[in-house]
Image (cartoon, rainbow, N blue to C red):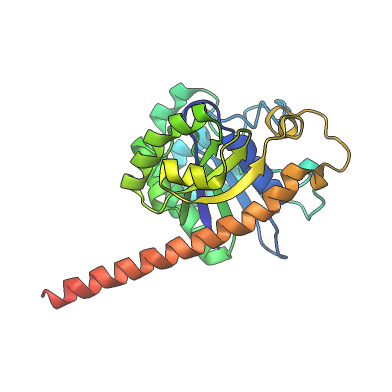
Length: 274
C-alpha cells in the first residue's frame, strides 16, 4: 500500500510522537498490518518513552546487523518487531500494529551500514507482496547519509514541522536539501504557532499535506508513557491522526504515480536513443 518516511529537523518538532499517533490510529482492513520503524541514527525513543523500558532492549534495529551479513535479513526483521496493538486504547487483533525499535545509543549506528539497504528492500516487499503499510521515523538526520536510502525508496517523504518561526527557520535548509535529494517533499504541521498553511507553503515552497494539533497532554502519553486520559482514542490528536493517515496515503499514491510516469518517459527516451 504505502511506505512513508517522516523526517525532522532541529528543535524537536515531534517526529516520533507524530509517528506513534499515526501508527495507533491508522485505519486497518482485516489482514492488514501497520509497521513503524525507528530508523533515526541518533537513537530511538519508544522503548524508554511509551514502553517505559518494560521490554528491555532485546528487540530492535541493532540486532539486524548480523542478519544483514549472513543473508537472513527478512526472517530476522520479523523477529525484531514489538506488538503495539493494545497501546493507545486500540482493540484490534494482536500484531496488527508493529514497532521496530531503534538503536538506544548513537554509537551503534556505525554498525548499521549494511542494514539500511536491507530495510529498504524489506519495506518494499512488505508493501508490495502483503499490502501492509510502513512508516519510517528518520528523526533529524536519518534522511541523509547511508540511511538516506530509506527516504529515496519511500513512496512519500514528509517533514514534520511546527508552525512557529523557530521551527520554520530550522526547517528551511532541511526541506531544501530533501527536495534536491528525493523531490516531492510534503509537510506534516504541528499546529503550535500562528502561521497558517498558506504562509508555511510560501516560506518552505512545499505543500502542507496534513496537520496535527498541539496537544502536550495527549502527546506525553505517546512520548513518555504518561497515563492515558479517558477516551484517548477520541482525543483531538488521535482524531487528527486518523484524518492525516488518509491524506498521507493519498500523497504517497500521487508521488508514486508521478515517479512511474517519469521512469516510463526516461525508459522511452533511452529506447529511442538506441
